Image 1 (cartoon, rainbow, N blue to C red):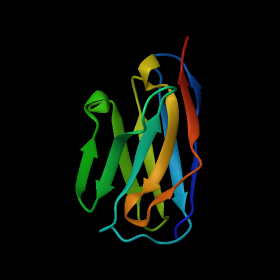
Image 2: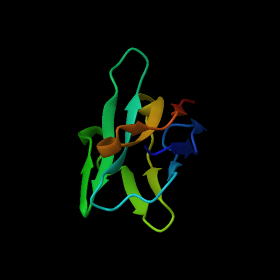
Image 3: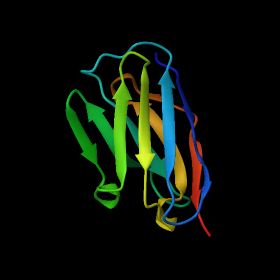
Image 4: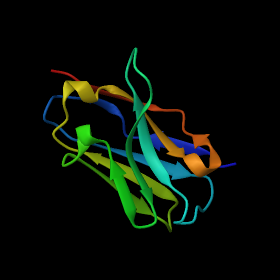
Length: 112
């Protein structure tokens, strides 16, 4: 089992930026995926971005605005979010789906 702890959420104005960070409790090889999901009120949890090896996948709604990155040595994965929109408001979760592990979630609110 892997424990995941997120940080970096908060309130930001439309057009602003935030960076989310997630730290895993142990080393996870690059062949295993690490990524970010989000869940808005009244909606299903959805994939935002995920890394597996050299392959990166983004939701269409965030392409060109969000960037996922991973530091293998530090067991971390980050999500740089730029040009934020009100519809990006959600609880964001870090996950290692191969281990069925999820963080506790961090709230991101985009509002003026």
